[in-house]
Amino acid sequence: MLQEIPVKKDDPVPAPPVVVTNQSFTQSFENIDSAIAQGWKFTNLSDDANGGWMVAPETGNGIAAFDGTNLLYSDYTASGANLSINPDAVISNWAISPKLLLQNGDKISFYTVSHGSIGYGASGSYADRLQLRLNVFNGSDSIGTTAADIGNFTRPLVDVNPLYKVTGPGDYPTTWTKYEATISGLNQPDSGRFALRYFVQLNGGSNGDELAIDKVEFKTSGY
Image: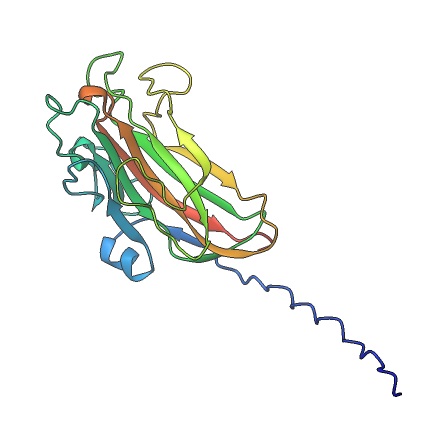
């Protein structure tokens, strides 16, 4: 009787490490069509969406660009909801970065300013709010379909004025101010995008006015 000799299987060959090239960039939003051509996406999911992000030398209330000639801005008209009927309407206006290969240590920064806290009396009247969120792809870069959705952008990195303050510590800056976040917690480099989301629970209109963004920078770790 012949004895069967087990065949030794070779150990699986480990996948080569992912090589991350330098993807660093600065986006000052001089032209919205150029930004779209570079892979940016602009999507307004606000209740009764009405318009969206705009590029101009200054905002509707006269805030001038921080870097270069133009800036990116949005205001309360991103939602066209009738607040007497729907006082709980929400602004959710997304500016989504090009696709990137992300790794721990990458840095995202941006400058922002709001008109709301300075435009209506010494103490201000309108709060505004901005989020920086991260999506490391799970096969999709969806943001959902409604104002409340965040889709796959489930990692919050920065939340400017989450308490809707109009004065005091934590309120939205009334001069150009830099915010920065460092990516961490990834098991390995992975593709994804980051997004800046103008997110305002309008509370009958008392929380939203106008904000601007300029000089968004992404810096690949190690470069």
